[in-house]
Length: 121
Image (tube, rainbow, N blue to C red; front, side, top):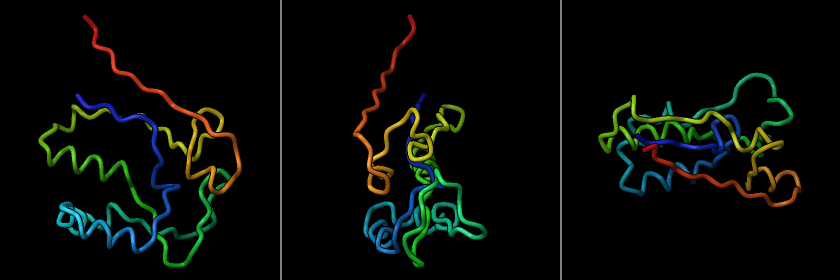
């Protein structure tokens, strides 16, 4: 069983074309090329809500970290039904979660998140 906690999600994880190129220089290049349309999104339509990360350039994309993690776990042999996700985006939920990325856009006090795993007897 793999549990993935809160993290920045595709709604707010803006990356540059250089980020994509950097991934292509890593051992995951084949996986990234094969699933490019799933991993890299382009915003279309109206501007996002105020809580979402604002676009900072015309050549930016939005990276789906959850999909990337899922692809890596599946490639490592973890069954889909053994992957548990907590759906919170750290950027979108300032009331309860800290976000380094959000603090680069909106000054705020640094906060910490703690996670633990407990096995029931």
